[in-house]
Image 1 (cartoon, rainbow, N blue to C red):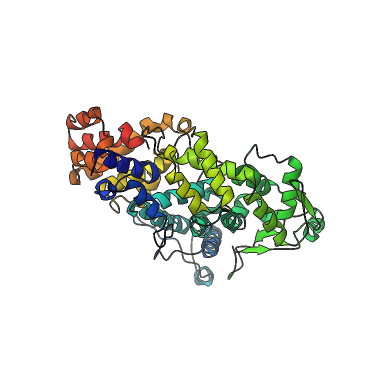
Image 2: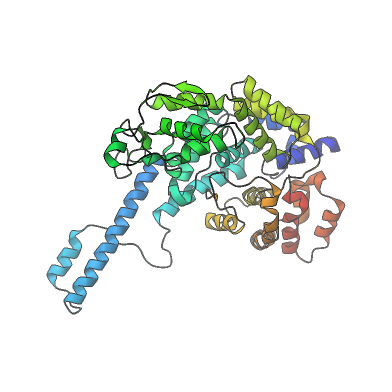
Length: 480
């Protein structure tokens, strides 16, 4: 094993994964690039097996029912209060009978009270997501899942516990497939339709639009063009946005109150604007939901989409200002393969520009936290609630981006928050230092990437806790 191969292995794990775990640097040192490429061919890559998690529809219905029960509980309590006041504080048998007539379970109380159902569902999804990243041998495909989930983001502030199922159903299922298939799955997913307000968008001349005197919502159409496909400079006009929004009318969901299929996708022709539409100079004949799918298919194959996706991928993995030659290679593969995301990922890994030794990318908070869990072997020893709180404290709450463009992927958005990471590093060190050897973690977590200054800093630390916290805050651990 040469020193250069070992350095390349450490670089590969930090740049394309979530950082080393255990002896993974040594494990892939014989062929670092081949090991990362092999992650694309792993059976079940990108999927979460055996988690037994509910679908987005099941989650949406469960949250709806939970909130309906909570409202009933509140009204019942108000009714009891009024009855008590009316009777001067004395209950009689009829009061008790009336209270028991509504069979709604009261909320549990006490110090061990579990979190509300929506939070439980989100925590289960978060646990599965983090475990997949921490337990990955390489982590490249999991990084791709996180990249695409941020590119096609929704927010749990609005879609609640459905954000996790959305990621599993629309992103993971297509992460190594074709971009056009992922685009179709994303834009027709109820979580996206609700997040970007398309569930109530109706054509001005549709049956429902006429009857209810309501009309178009352009949010989904605009974000598809601006963020998901062509990019802000992709050559579309406001007229294209409006026409595309008309195409997407009728893409909605079944109301969550419906007990069997609530929260599922449905095309409602009564909401759909009748007639042909022209988008980017091409006429699309009316054909119900297929009209929208034809537009999405053409957007997926548009040269501006290839350029936009290539730029974002290169920025995410390699540099805030990536080499134009790398972007060109990715865009060409995207064009040549009809958006085959596995082939685009292979091009990224095979490009010399992707393996520059300069490590300039600052890890986002969530990636950094997973890296800590991997290098310390602490999976399962830190409660999921604390992990989620740590992400939120550092400005990247899980599935809660501040806007539809997702979390920023450049250093300027995160550098001011780096000092706050010391608080998290110190907390992790307090929990984990007793079971770890910081000097050993320098070798397993950084290896040849660790500078002499970094090694000296760890050696001179006043305690094991301090040494571990300092290790997690070194430039080598913070960057890709």
